[in-house]
Amino acid sequence: MTEYTVTFLPQGITVPVKAGCNVLQAQILAGLRPDAPCGGKGTCGKCRVMLEGREVLACQTPVDRNMTVRTADQEQHKILTGGIQNQLQPDGTDDYAMAFDVGTTTLVAYLLDGHTGALLARSSCINPQSRYGADVISRIQHVLDGGGDAMAACVRGAMEELTAEAARKAGIPPERITASSVVGNTAMHHLLLGIDPGPLVTPPYMPAVFKAIEKNGARILPNIAGFVGGDTVGCMAAVRFDRLEELSLLIDIGTNGEMVLGDKNRRIACSTAAGPAFEGARISCGMRGAEGAVDHVAVQDGEIVYHTIADAPPRGLCGSGLLDLVAVLLDREIIDESGRLEGGAYRLCDNVTLTQKDVREVQLAKAAIRAGIELLAETMGVQTADIRRVYLAGAFGNYMDPASACRIGMIPPVLLDRIVPIGNAAGEGAKLCALSRAEFEYSRRLAAGTEFLELASLPGFQDCYVDSLEFCEEEEA
Ligand code: FES
Image 1 (cartoon, protein in one colour):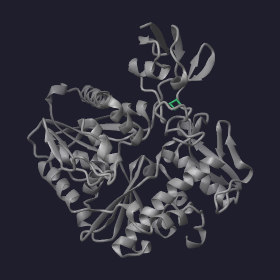
Image 2 (cartoon, rainbow, N blue to C red):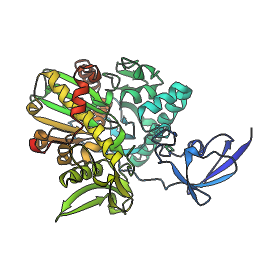
Image 3 (tube, rainbow, N blue to C red):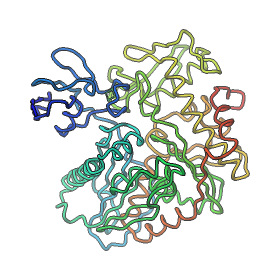
């Protein structure tokens, strides 16, 4: 079969590629990590590259000759690595331990002193599986189409690289790291371990494997349901959920929105299909939280003003900026309660225009989260106003303005002053388990003692979801 070469700049990498491949596949072959939220379907527009002076979609451009392709410079994504901290009590059986938080979007690794629990180094990267799609469904589909080995290998490879990088930063030989733990959502768990993810996309959407796994010194936290995984268990471990006196809600908004409501007596978890809107996918100017992303929008002296990450020229809108912009436009009545955007589009600045379709995506995402909160409360037999504390985990929860989340009705406004961002709590849970067997056992008990609520099976789900689509919250605030 005919072979061509593709050279990627500025990386200076040349790879041989068989005719019939496209440029996106060539990028993957070259070991690059292209942003491809739609998984190469040609719908997201995020895989643009320059070819012979023209901008083209890498996934839609066949390699039919030798080519030189210029890609976007490797972006420095802002990845949340900090968060609440617990008093760690290491077993002291290993000199060094790694804790991994394998997220759909990002991987974060922590190198810990096995005796003191001190954090020695941290490393992070975009999950290389993003090349197969931003959302877990595209990736599962890729595995079901026969790509399971590549899917597992790329994430394992990235974990090895992160380990090597952290060891280098700490000045220790990587082979002295003899313990590790992993948290991840159920799909990440299955894709990493090479477990068939088919059951996750077939009713009743349950994991093929629930239980905590210990393999070659690695402790892998258990799953609760198909879309409530070890990352949620890690968050629960970090806040000591089963010891909470007050009714509390834990929300982790990532590519999905997982939630747990309860206290020391009872805990119920659910997952909402919030979709990746808040991570920039499916939003016309959406981008991840990287340099040049508009991350906050506010009104100052009557004017709408914005801030970008690293004060760089605006390139797009990340989740927190998107939330703020919609909240501000609601206050200005440029968006009405039904979500209609005056004129069909709002131009914030160069490169950032919010469209009607974007507003609809926000409505779908926020309604999914709000419906989850309402139905958890109903199942628990409480009112949302009874919730005393809202723990917001994850990057989006950390950077977003809670007032905007309440303004658009994603979180009930009555809870505004009870919101506590807790950063990368899943990673914190992973650290606890990497250092201590008792903590790993604790995570098992937490998972086993948490009920799961399948929202879509509730008779009231559809009505609650539809009711939550509108933006009519102000009077409740
Ligand atoms: S348009 Fe090419 S990956 Fe989405």
